[in-house]
Length: 370
Image (cartoon, rainbow, N blue to C red; front, top):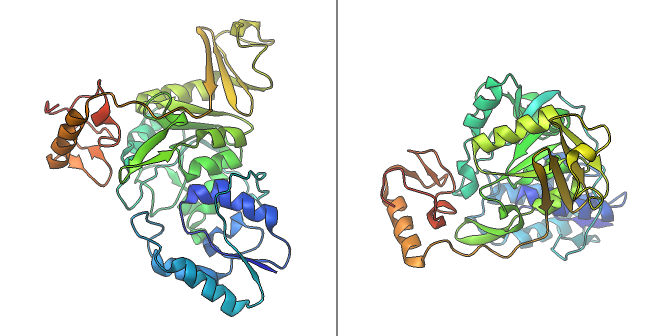
């Protein structure tokens, strides 16, 4: 008998790494630790007794600023006290790849666009993305909008169908999966909901500040680099998974294309890469064709083809000198219009101010300070 100790880190790592590992090794009679509200994700419902120490350490959900301390040892003590002869298993990153887990999926809820308006309770560059403006742009075009995630970790977006209202008992997980399954298009950042969208093969657009960021390691919190995982989402998703670079206007343009004139073809890219889209059998004027392989996609448009690679790139070189970056950083942090919790400027509405904009040669302070 095995006891799988609970994962208490980021939700994205749970979906993309921990769950496939559990599903690959679990056998009938084994015990699983995890958030009881997320029972839908596991082969059997998690044991609440194993989650109690996690809930005590992180009462408001996982926070990267709170160290786990003695939590790993506490989990082992609880498990051995309850199942003294069990073999304890704890996920660790080994590089081994496991198949997608076969979840018991809820019925889809038909919706045009699903957004994942992620807003963590701690400072994080991803917190500042203007989800409300994107939702308004979608609604102005007559599209219905759904919100994936949980109430506690999502930005407020009015006049949208929220996952946590569809299925409040589990905090919104069942509602999130139902919305993802019924969506014509899903928009996320590089986040846990993005991995969940790829798990259920929802047509998805993943937003990044600049082209190439989806293949790089970026600074997101506490000055630390985090490797973007677009490649993992693209690899899992058997339908459509494309990056979008920029802000609200860029995402709306991509949504219009995906929802109104895009056809998806699974198969080798090489025979089509050098050809015009009009050579594709059955192509209609104005149509976009996306040819998808596991590791890359080819977007074929009348104006030309674009190859989307997923292999990692080296970190981008700083665009401006160190002393100028530090001056900009200090200026922003001292400014009354800077919102540290979301890394956002209240004047222009831009996110990623400290994480991205202060190192850009083209970004400008709306107050004229740099």
